[in-house]
Length: 164
Image (cartoon, rainbow, N blue to C red):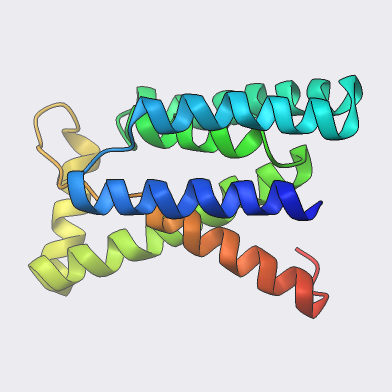
């Protein structure tokens, strides 16, 4: 990944994590501006082929995360955040980020449920939630920090030469 593109992803994920923690949302102004900036950066730095790759990655991000939004697993801002990251990342890096983020988010969610309700209470709550999704009110977890942790993990793995 080119240095400027990586700086764009870091900036996006840090800003989104801050807004998600402080205000409980990822603002459209942030995600849409980073989508446009990513398209411009890739086009003006690397040409029209890279712009097409960015468009492909943004579309893939939508296809990967929209079902999670539709099923109320995550918020729309999280979908748009992955799309904004896609404007800066290759398709392969985007898919890795999406997968690792889901894994980190799930682990954090389980720990939060166990911490709030105790071991068996968390399992019962999860079972109830899966059976009655529409009736249960779930606790919102800021997901942008999971993106930041996942990207950090992927960069460490890349530096160490680990393959995923």
